[in-house]
Length: 65
Image 1 (cartoon, rainbow, N blue to C red):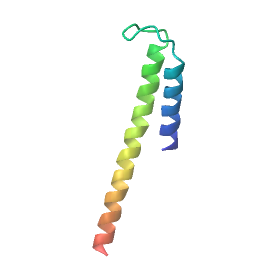
Image 2: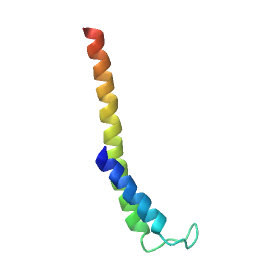
Image 3: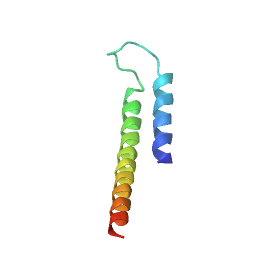
């Protein structure tokens, strides 16, 4: 989860520091931003799936005992 938060922070920093040249005009760092975004999304999905799985298993364990 910390890795996911760090990657989102990195993406936010790079996104905010990117020059505003227009909404549809690509910049030099646009590919880097897309790569960072992809790197941020993957650990986020894994974290959410793991937390959901842990909650389901905890509820099943409480019901079984």
